[in-house]
Image 1: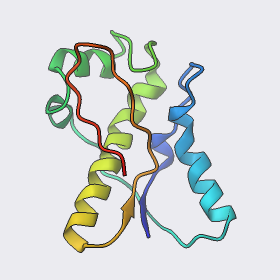
Image 2: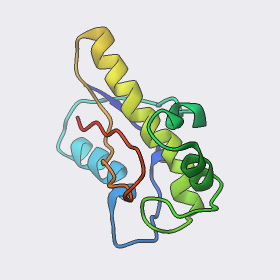
Image 3: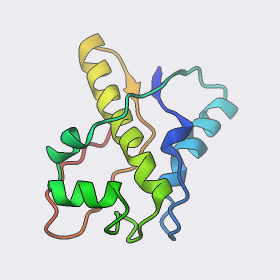
Length: 123
């Protein structure tokens, strides 16, 4: 199975929420259990792509560390990982649709603050 994953997706969220550290734990667990996976580097999404799901001011603020992210902090590591976690999800969905096969993005769906327009996919 194709797994859209890179270490660039992993970040210390500086929070009690473990979501940003889960991708590496999941991939390592699959490999330790002998699963055969084809790891593919995801394409980072652009700010313009994120605008389709979130308000531009929110996207720009999080990506430039000016406003709190989904972990309620201004972590540069989290902000820098967001374009890859979102890219992994988008690439996995596109790949599954185009090939009719299976694809995975080992990412979590985040709960966003009230008033933020967001669309979440969970595979």
